[in-house]
Amino acid sequence: MNVVDSSGWIEFLTAGPNGPAFKAVIQETGALIVPVIVIFEVFKYLLRTHGEKEAHNVVVAMQQSAVVDIDTSLALAAARISRDLGLAMADSLILATARAQGATLWTQDEDFAGLADVRYFDKAKSA
Image (cartoon, rainbow, N blue to C red; front, side, top):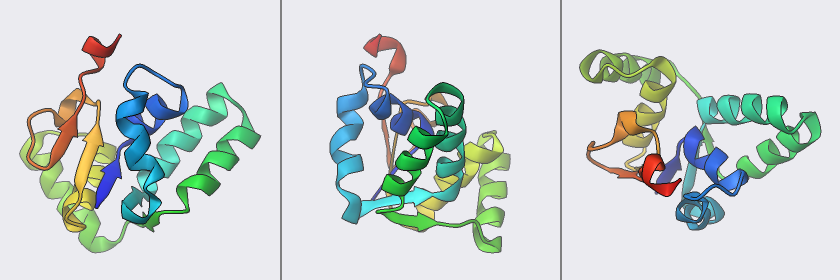
């Protein structure tokens, strides 16, 4: 199972240099878990850059995979991760979701570099 964080989705959707690294994972919808906070972040980004229709279409596509909502258990796990690793709320929720699902987190967010069960792609080297 895999989780692609917001930076990976945006890189894929905007055809960034690391986009191909995320493409196969995103297209394997049966093995993809989408944290609801990722939907929020990607939708917000696309609203600003591409408009309502494109943002909505991407959310529909994201919902073809298993969407994980935030519940109390996940919120508490994310709070512990935030405390232990110094991550922001959204990053903590994404990592907590991946860990709760036994999934690998795919990202180019350097806050996750070096963590277990994370596939990190250096954005600086891709440019």
